[in-house]
Image (cartoon, rainbow, N blue to C red; front, side, top):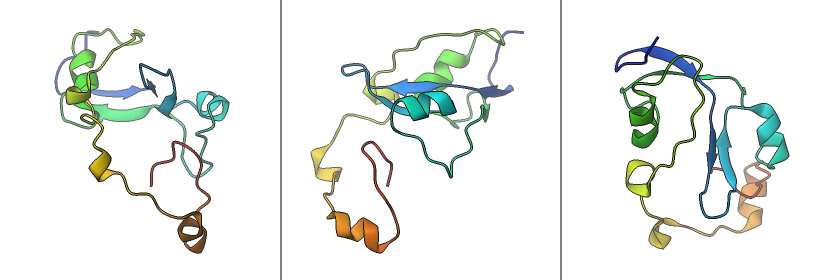
Length: 112
């Protein structure tokens, strides 16, 4: 079956930064543990999405259209079809004690 816009699917993925190869997101528990981004509160399983509905970043949504069910694919997604170019003005540095005060133990790459 070829995926089309509007199809309901479940996908596993690994998101990496091209330049460094650093994994920043995944639906696979083993990969998360191997790359230090494991969160015991997150349920690692295929993500349910509707193709073309914006449930994932635009570049991934576009890459899914035309794929076969069960097909594996490596997709290079430019910033403008993902999260945009990095903007240092949107990065805020917080002291570690602020996280601790809220009961959060931060790890590198963790989304906060």
